[in-house]
Image 1: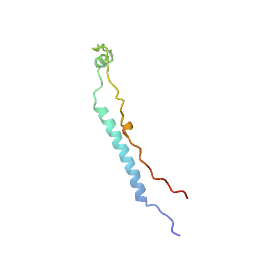
Image 2: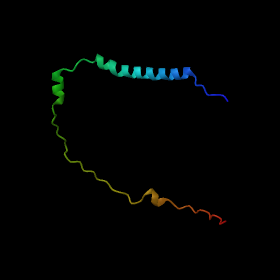
Image 3: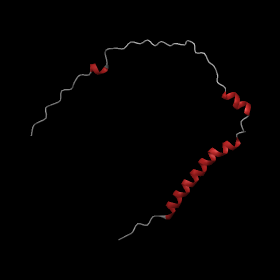
Image 4: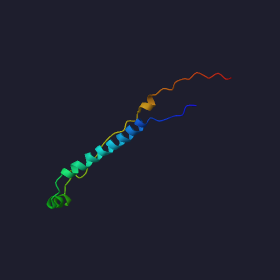
Amino acid sequence: MNRYQPHRPTAVLGAAAVLVSTLVLALAVAVPVGFAPPPDARVLARIALPIEVAIEPSRIEVVGLRERQTAQNDVQPIAMPAMPQS
């Protein structure tokens, strides 16, 4: 009886693919963060302040009519042939 022997290069290539994928993802996230300048305290303070807004008009009325006729009312039943009794 022949025994199954997994190919070692396949397992090694799979592990290498996972390692390279992890490395690329980590670099894609970490490198841009390192290039960004540190935020200025005045900019952060300006962003944190609430902004007052006025919405005009303050009410929106939606008017619509519902049609009584629907597609389901137009469907005609299909006559099915009787199944033979056995």
